[in-house]
Length: 301
Image 1: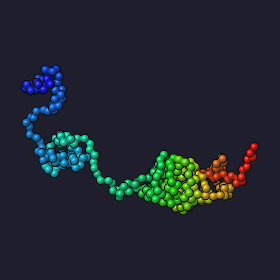
Image 2: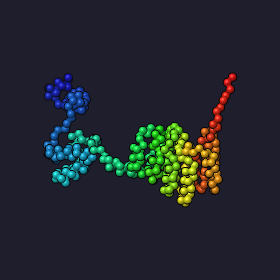
Image 3: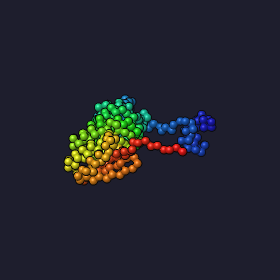
Image 4: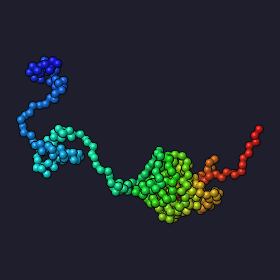
């Protein structure tokens, strides 16, 4: 109240500041009056129309800098001012911060063109909730060379012969589901297609209880085709648990009796693991252990 009375009595700001032993800025903040400098009498570098042009250009394209606006003013309107002047006009219009740009969505054509450059697709610790047709369409837009699915839950139909065969550039396939799953639609057709095409993926890993309808005959044909191609690349294959055959012993003998192949067999209570190695090719898969079909009777006391 004392400051207001002093103003009513005609005292200026410096006198009030000395009287109350404070600064001029405190007096201005108390009275809520901006501490504006007095006009120097110098003419403005731009007219009101020029200021509107500067503001319109900035609003139309928020990415323009003061230097860009200054160049366009000179080229299009013949107005020659400094970039600092443009900054002051933008600051006065509150256009000195970053602003969101409202732009249209990327068209479908450009989105598809971007997906063509995708060569690696890795999914980890997620739920893949997509239909088989949508999955095929997505992969067809990419140039997939490396496909990793680690500890995910998914529909087994996402990894079938229909999905795998169109991947012409595939080099690495790793499927490691969160829980054991049965790829019912994955069979020897994919292996036959790889063998006849002549470009076999160097790495195929079906792990963590991943089973399929692939048979040892299909694996043997794929190994033979890979060795005949005289490729120096190292091949690392793990086809998981094979449920496409019931002749377990006959399937095992086809690898043991094949000349030049090193076969290692290890059994556990769940399956029989077979590892086949020749030159730079290492292949392994598992066969279900054939349990006796007789009934087990336990006497009750």
